[in-house]
Length: 121
Figure 1 (cartoon, rainbow, N blue to C red):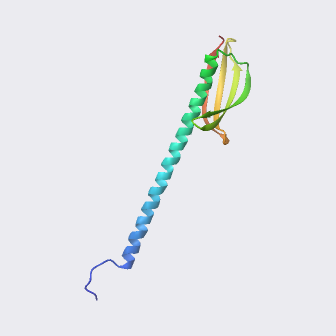
Figure 2: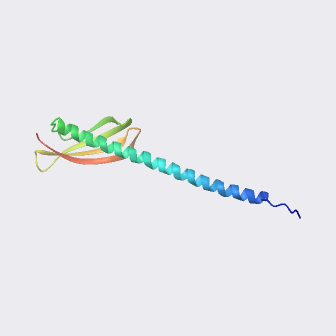
Figure 3: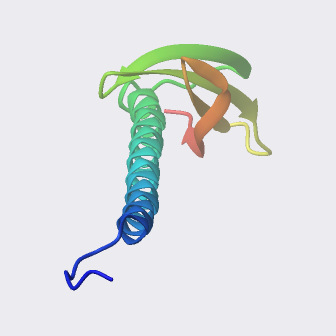
């Protein structure tokens, strides 16, 4: 039996394995946080794009006819598609506008929706 003190190879391998698992978990948590921040940014930009569309209609004093249309916009370097549905209300001087904003690269994924009402100028 040796009188020298130190770590055996098995002890070192176990410590390295534990460290590797901890680092992998930290990397995964960082990746999830980054994905969440990117998703939140996309939703925020989509909401701004919808609000900008309503502000534009109001500023131009437009009273759109009932119809469905698609508009391509860019908000914060993010290409977006706005699906706009204009419908009548019980009051003929007011129109309902439903907006659904999607990432132009993934049109099936709606990032934000907004409903607004515009009165006849």
